[in-house]
Length: 197
Image (tube, rainbow, N blue to C red; front, side, top):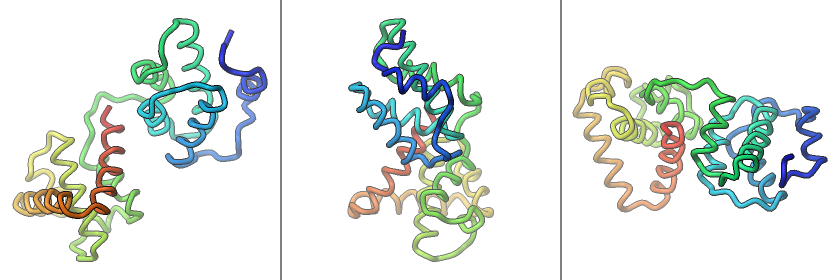
C-alpha cells in the first residue's frame, strides 16, 4: 500500500498519462516535484528535490515513476525521504558512470546557463558574456576536477596555465564585490555540485 498518495494519482502514474512534454527543463522538473510533494503534504529537503530533478532528465514518466518508488520505499521500509534514499531510487532511472566530472561536462553546463554555443566558449571573443562564462568554467574545472591547469587550458583552444590562473583570480575578485555576479556563479556552481554527487 502506498500511503500518502491518493488513488487518482497512483492510477494516473500507472496508466502513464503524463503531460506531452518529453524532456522538461530542470526548473520545470523541480516545480513539478515540489507541487507533488506539497499536494501530498510531504516535507522533503530541497536537496532531495534538486537531486531528482537534476538527474532524471529524459521525460515525465521516469520522473513520476521515481517519485512513486521513492514514496513506496520510504513507506515500506519506514525510512525518511533523504538524499541517500533518493540516490538509491534515481540509479534505477539513469545510466550511472564511475567517471568523475569532466571539463567538458562543466563547459556544457556553463554554456547552457549562459545560452551560448560550445564553440563560442572556446573562442577568443571579448564579449562580456563569453569572457565571464569562460572564466567561471575554468574556475569550476579547477575546483571540481582533478585536471591540471595545463589540461584545463588545453580545453580552451590551447590557452596556457597563466590564463587559467588569471581567470580563477578574476572570478574570486568579482565574487567579493559583485552580488549579481555572485548570484549567477552560485547557481552554476550548484548545478555542478549536483552533477558531481
